[in-house]
Image (cartoon, rainbow, N blue to C red; front, side, top):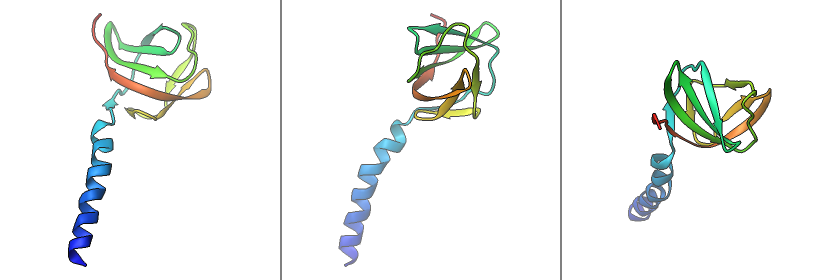
Length: 97
């Protein structure tokens, strides 16, 4: 019985741990500017420094109003774009390019 429990516990960690490790999360805090690329990719800026690149499942316009719901964002979280919730498909640190 103990051996079966240990095997199930190991199997659980093998199945769950990769999903936890592969989840991308970042502390964004605040931003004061953004640009839109390809209609669904947003790069948030703090001054002239790019903070994070976010891909969402909705259309974003250069005139859109963006609001973060949390300062610590992960894949599959939500943000407000023009007062509608959009899912974050992926996020990564933004580069200067």
